[in-house]
Length: 196
Image 1 (tube, rainbow, N blue to C red):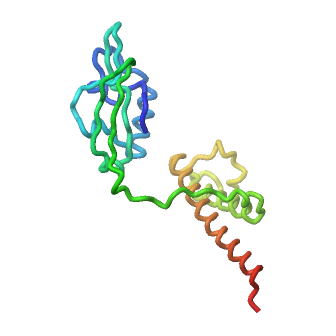
Image 2 (image 1 turned 180 degrees about the vertical axis):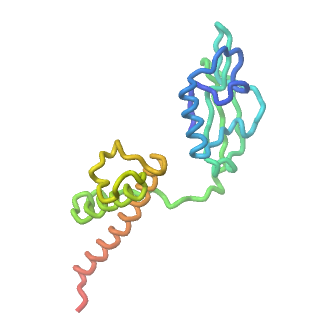
Image 3 (image 1 turned 120 degrees about the horizontal axis):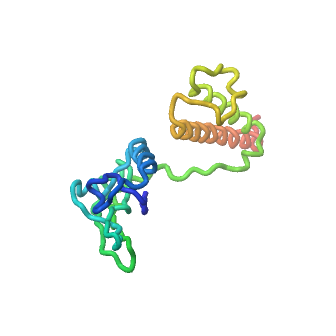
């Protein structure tokens, strides 16, 4: 993730001539996300104590490192260098990041939902039941499991974070969808080539 975050993570290291900590609420949220997803500030990993800035203002004079890369812990070893370049016709300096892609292991690839399944009543019922199971599995104890569907989604509270719940839900739906799709393909093959 890269961008002009309009805030700094470390007020002492990343600002010069600032009077106040800008955007404290947004900073708190960003730090929560960094901790939740174990992101690394690439520049700080390479240069733990270097004071270098990506943004400047002349009047009143002040500087800050507002632009930075946040990467996953697993991607960090693939990064070969990072640096703040000289600015050109802007109040922001570009940040360079080099990644060694040659030894990057490829994942499973992108999974796409076969949208024709959304017209399949059996599939829809299967997924609705799965969602109900997962909601009841992770709902806080104050809800009766059998009445979980009567509670509005926005009112539900879970024993895990909303992000974790969404990740688990997506993973379970994907797994159930793949299994169901294989089942449907096998059923179609049986119909086309019946065994006598």
